[in-house]
Image (cartoon, rainbow, N blue to C red):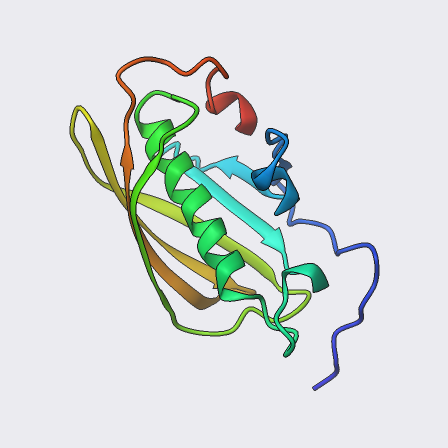
Amino acid sequence: MNAPQITDQPAAAPAGMKKLDLLAGFMETNGPLWGRLDEADGLPVMGFRVELRHCNPMQICHGGMLMTFADMLLGFTVSVAAGGKKFLPTVQLGGDYVGPAPLGAWVEGKGRLIRMTRNLGFAECLITADGAPCLRASGIMKIPSQESREGNVLNLFR
């Protein structure tokens, strides 16, 4: 097996993915993240290319990066299902690491809404690295009683 090439420029995202213009700060620092809305159910599909800065010493994507990605994916999933409210605080997040995401791999996930109440959204996702499962996660997101000032999250994916 050939070792991955380490370059300053990560490989491109798959066709159909749009670079997400995220707010400055933590979310922007962990990117670039890419996304699109699934044609079948309108929920987000998101991904990123594993860069050296995402890796542990074994050149495998750090578990903290994978959980950060899962947190964003699940939050956006519930947000879109709730009509696009921008910021939904995480109430609970859990995950199981089921395989590696090596340097250079395309990591992709799609959330699935389990249940929505007036105040909470329950979702789960399976995240893959080059098509092989690497993380299974679930989360509960708080749905705010009013719209956030930042606008609608759906605009990120259009």
